[in-house]
Length: 144
Image (cartoon, rainbow, N blue to C red; front, side, top):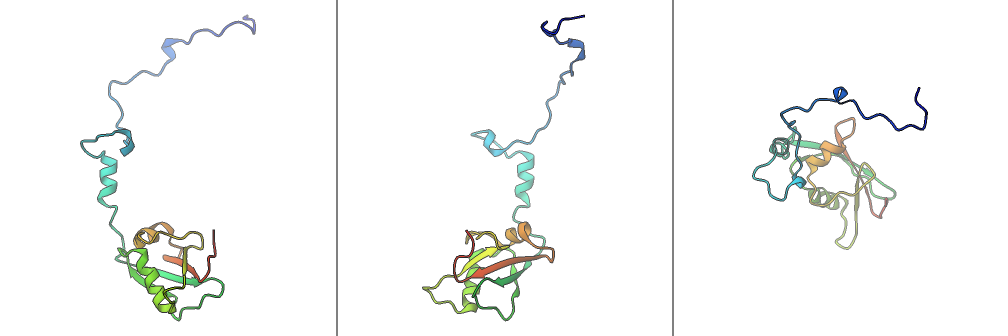
């Protein structure tokens, strides 16, 4: 019987997981190397279909916040490859907003996307259960 203060016994080498001769094919991030001669296969496959959208057009639903005017047709479609700035310009035109006035747009009432964001990417990531991209708009800052 060993005393509780005695040192632990050395590990038994026969009870170890054996090393394999081949190394596993692990995904490699772009940050792992300063110079890559080619893209890793997972990055190459991701980039090959990054710009592809399952639908050529997406549905956008506009929801007013506060005293913002209500659109007559709040549900519209837009080409997936358009930038978000196209949505902003279209909405400003529909609301007849002057050049000195502001309109604030928020996806899912939570964040304002960059103007160069692609609408198809926003739809792919933030669409609702009805397959619509919900954009809330306000004449004054509403969130954050």
